Image (cartoon, rainbow, N blue to C red; front, side, top):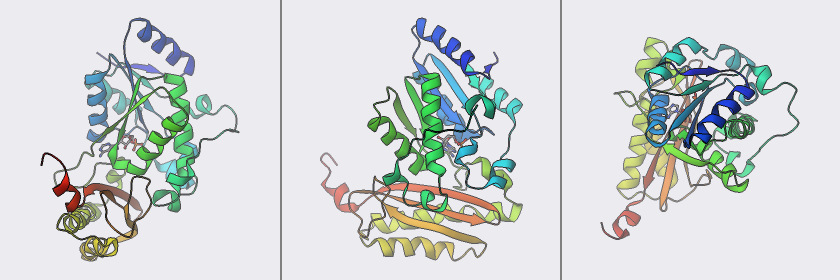
Length: 292
Ligand code: AMP
């Protein structure tokens, strides 16, 4: 069966109103489309937990820091509708920009403490745009649960905090990163890589694994953990690192590894920006965890 295509906010309210009256739990999967198996994992998780699954497909202009990036973002709604139908999605909300932003926004949601570093530092206004559109989508769809990928760890942390701070009645469900067999995190942007860039791309994940290995073998010094990763990337001259950090749950860089940290990185291959991250736990904490 095909997924119902909804393009207006009124249609969404009508659709979710009926679903709610039928007693369905509503799950929302916000995306920018050009769907791949990473999005598929979010949808499949939502499908197992919710009676009604709404995927949103919207390339959100206010989260792009570069106009050319916004303009060349791949839009292929027909393919996305087929992708959703194959996964028994109930409805796809794919609004035009004018439907979401009939007039310039005067209200924004900002989570500055979590957006200060990493992608927030290099993409000014990006997370303000993300938090604002996700807040709007939550008000439009009013889902019981919403599904986000750990691949975008800073985004996930920001959404979780926004929901907590603003008492939004939605459960945020994190979904592990889906990777290609060679380790590259799936992303719509991977399709832009040339064959040579695609061959080089998995070095980012290998670098994070090297950093993880340093942590689990007892390294506490974040600078040394980072150099373990940077040493791997140095073997791939085409890759230009934008940032590579060891951060805490608040997405703040740490000098010393303690408890659970996240290794996060962004890097460029030609004109394409890749991001990736891994959570890891220092050995002391593992050893002292009861029951292990
Ligand atoms: P995007 O369409 O890139 O804005 O992504 C929409 C959602 O899919 C976000 O919550 C992303 O974190 C998630 N996502 C994208 N790629 C992956 C992946 N490889 N694994 C898991 N989730 C992903």
